[in-house]
Length: 374
Image 1 (cartoon, rainbow, N blue to C red):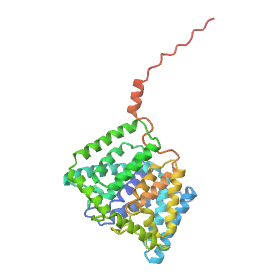
Image 2: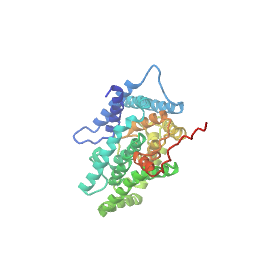
Image 3: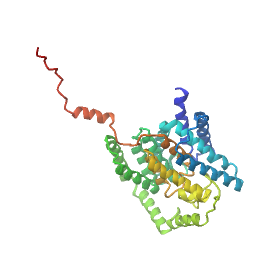
Image 4: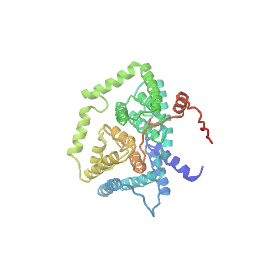
């Protein structure tokens, strides 16, 4: 394998190991830093600095505004390490534009392994809220985000069969945020009329999910339901609806024009669990507006929409696409800004569908050249 073919896989490897924040036996920030270093190094080798391809101005200017906000905030707070992080993310955005959606093959491998590990851990431990290999401490939210967004990224590069596998893992996590994200994406599939032979095969995977749900211990789902009802009543160990609303109100009322400090690792229940508002809290209103401009422009102008919608859906009730999945936003926008073909997942025939069509289609009689009368 030559170097150019290897780069997308190495880049995808960095993208895949970045979310693993709680690896047993390793320091909590080691794997994210390793993934970040891989992404930055591969990006530098890909970029032609003499002829920079920055992409659409409505994308790269807002992204640079986010970088500038982090630089200013770092100078004000004295946290100079964060001054390097987001500007480096802009390099990763440029690298993603150069490499394209080939980088998502490695993510497909991650999603399959994570989904299988979630299902296995669910049956071994007999409980929900499973984090799989990504989070042995059972941070089921990051597991759900990787399965939902990663499944879309794999399908974007033609690995559509990863989606039913990801759904099985998602059910094992019993993450309501992830299930809501999957439902939103399902509605988008219907709205875009993304139908074809592949959708039928994916529905087989959905049937497997139904079977898994049917054989799960009722106590598991009762526990997940009780937890969600506890959130609604304000009597749960996780964040209640009132606590989330209090977070949102605090972020809106107590914002600073320069933000309160950029952070992607040290977060807890009181970290703002909503992406635009956590950007407002950390970097200020200009960065938040810039992020919103990038999302709106991407949805309006780019033919590839699923991955951007997945980012938005998984950022409605959690901060993970800004924190534990920080590079994924920059990579998705980079690839989407370069692709010029719609990212339909299920449209188009598979080899099985083509074989059936050839089998069922009546054959035409052989062509006979008419006789020439002298």
